[in-house]
Every structure is written in C-alpha cells, then in structure tokens.
Image 1 (cartoon, helix red, strand yellow):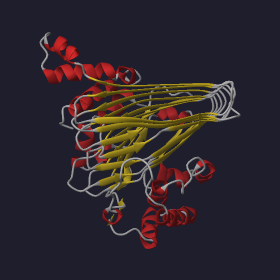
Image 2 (cartoon, rainbow, N blue to C red):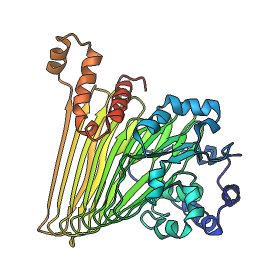
Image 3 (cartoon, rainbow, N blue to C red):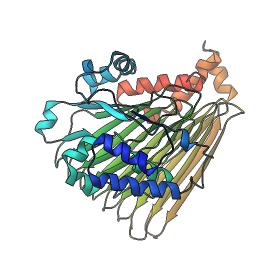
Length: 441
C-alpha cells in the first residue's frame, strides 16, 4: 500500500494498523500529528518550499523482512549490490540493515553478537520485542514537539535502527544501516535509537542515497544516542541524497561521565541539507567530537554544523568543519557551543574551514558560542579561501588538467575527515566528492 495523501489522523491510524503496532505508539503518533500541524518551518536557514500534500508518507514493503539477500526481488537486490552494500556486509561489518523507502527489508547480524546479548534490530521490531527498554529511552532526548520535523517524524516514523550494547562489550567491526529512497515524492522517516552501556564501544555507519526525479523527496529522521559512563560511540554518516531531496534531520547524543561521542559526518548530496549533530556532555570528563565535510554544488544548499552543550565540569568538545562550495553551491556552517555555569574547567575548540572553487559559489559561518563560567576555555577559528592561481599553475605544470588539479586540492583539503573513515569508505568518499565538484553527482 502507498499513502501519498494529505496527512490526517485517519492516515496515521492506517499506517499504525498496517504495522500492527501497540496502542501506545498510535497515541504517540496522533499527538505528534497535532504538533506537526501547529508548528511552523524553522525561522533560520534556507527557505523550505515543501508541499506536504504531495509527499508519499508510507509505502508498504512487498515481502516480509528477511536476513537472506536471495529472498529480495532481483531488481532491488541488484540496487543494493551496485551500491556496494552486500560486499560491505561480507567484508567489513558485524551486521547490517537495509531500508528501501519506508521499510527495512533486510537485517542481519553475526552470531557472535547474539552470544554477547547485543540487540541490533529495525526499530519496528524492537518496539514489539523490547517495549520496556525501548520506551525507557524513546522520545526522552529528542522531544517530539521540538520542531516541525521532529513532530512529522513522530507522526509517520517507519524503519530505522535500534541498538543496545550491553556493559563492557566491544564490537570488532562496525554495524551499518543503509537508507535508500527509490520512489518519486517519497518521504522517508526512519527513527534510530542507540544505547551504549557502561564501558562499551560501538561504531555505527549510516549510508544514504536516492535517484533523481523532477519532483522533490523529503528525508526527516530522528536519532537519539545514549553513551553511558566510560562508553564510546562513533556514528559515521556519508549521505549522498539526490539534488531533489530535502534532508532535514535531528541527531543528538547525551554523554555520561568519561564517555566519548564522535560524529563523523559527510554531506555530499541533497537539495537542502539542515543537519547539526549534537552532543550533550552530561557527566564529568565527558567528550564530544564532530568532524564533518559538506560539499555544495549547483542547486545545493548545505546548511550544516554541530552543537556541543557542556553541562558538567572538565568536559571537552572539538568541532572540525570542512566546507566546499562549487558551481554556484552554498556551503554554510551553523553551530552552537555552550559551556554552562556548572561546566567548570571545560574546553571547547571549533575550527571551520571553507574552500570556494569559483565566483558563483558562496559560504557563511554562523556560530553561537557561549561561556558561562570563568574557568573554561573556548577557541573558534574560521577561514575562507579560494583556489589560488599559483596552486593551479603548479599542478597543471606537472601534467594535470584544471579539473584534476582542483580535485587534488579538494582531496587534500578534506584529509582530516577522510582519515577518520575506514579505508573502503574513504575511497567511496573520494569518488563522491570527485563527482560532486565536477558537476556530475
């Protein structure tokens, strides 16, 4: 079943009925719908011209969820194979989930993780199998009525990932989810909830793609992450949405004593991208890191950055943002770092670097930095540069044409980001950036 109609309470009830959800989820959805209808689009950033009556809010999967690729229709399996998802599972991952439009269609995890009591499920399955654990954390870090898109997600969320890592458990390889929008006018609203318990470690990787249509698509996800005492979580994203996709997501982590949260955030695609991964440093000596790259080319606005909120003493945060603007694109850093009065002896560092490849493109840095005590330190550095004629001349004199010379400069510029990726993903990032700045993405 496909649901592209005006979003009403009857539509919400229909989605919930198809999913055979418990009543508390239906009631939550209806409450979110009221908030969505009441709230306005953000009063900052780029203008959003979304026709909500044209969005497909839900598309039922044709076959049951499976852990065997052979059970999936040939054309869909070939899409994921061409994207490298099947190969990645075999060679690099401890588990993977694959979402196609509204639903997760494939999900698998190695047996060793079951033996360690790790939970790695699609969100819809987690609600039914672990309702008490799910409800303990769901909607506690990102409230449903924070903004129009958290409310929309709450009303129609489908798919996504639920992960629980038991205390003192370390995974040898990452877990990954891959999100594919494949239908025109499609809305994708996955919900991700991750709990990394005391002394444990997790690396989670997220990939996103969509084909190009003449009509716009909408991706509005919500991610909540809980990093407990002495735990570590790394969340790596490489999104390559098509340039007709609005990517409007809310991602937030709360970090307990001596915990570490790392956002490794790559933004290559989308028509308009508004994404500001957040760390709430809630325990002494908690640390938050966000290393990001955003590449904007013709018809793209990358309005991205990070948020670091220091609430406890001796906390540290580090933001490194790399932005690239080419062919008339707009790459803007927007971020907030706040050291509260209770976060004494804390440190924060923000470094924003932008490279502009032509006269048509633009970039802005829009920071909000607040320090509410006298024992803490906050440093912010921002640079904007253009490719110099001398650089180009030097490289072209060594036999490179102008486009290859520009590409080489850009790859050096984003090296700090690439170094944080597993090798196979760094290679893919190189390919995507090359296509993007060359105008072929």
